[in-house]
Length: 399
Image (cartoon, rainbow, N blue to C red):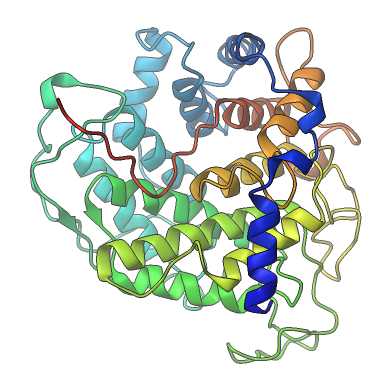
């Protein structure tokens, strides 16, 4: 996209008068809160504390703002997240995200352990795969608990000192863009807790994200450059490759948000000349989302790639996509994506689609892409709550 094109896109993005969905008005916050409360109640009563998506459920219930945090099931869940073996990328990333939000001060050491797992499981090409437990590798330096800040929860504001992480090993040759976007979310939470992620981790993730972006600005599930015959193309090769899997919404929105995170921390912590607000790759990602914008299904999933990712079912990971859309908008504080008031449009859709018992469930097949009412409900609540904080910290003036 030429600079003039970027300027035009940003100009359109800042003009709410013509925004899609503006005529529908803003959702009533009371309706949003009621829907979240109903969804959180359903989650807590339907096996969420003991299932495969335990960390996601805990993170969602915390951000719901309505679920009682002195509930024994919730407190037992906190203890489990502080002690259980770190095994898989998704779970570890969500553990870091939860503990940073819950109390980043008292849990700083545990958050550092999550950071070590994620750094040491980064693939050789800069992505992340599902990960595996760390055995026989050096642990993060023990700097104590970081203090309790008076026992404050909902995130402490200070820590005793920064905890540096260094890489001890590498993961497999390559991963995928789903594990990658969650690993980057987890690392972002670690960085917020003053756990210092190595520069090369951010840099390698950024390089592969930019390299995997197609000529239209979107991302597929896998790295774009492996050739159909199995040969490995070099990074930096041509963007248009015949036979690659098509880009689709959840990967494109998730990777756009991931770019924002990587570029922000390379600039904030290492002085790199990265500015996500003016970055071509970020703007191309936003342009892809705007041109394919919908909240009613996962755009691009109606196509079918040579590896069957996406599957050809437009409902595949629909709510997973909506949460990725929320992150893309919130991380960079993009109120509009193109002419789309993404939050108002999405919130109205979700309020209309909530079941009477409080859950959300994808349409189409019984469980498209492995989704379930538990994950769908989590992603719906996180979207409605706008749970993701912008990467640029808010500054407040003291008295």
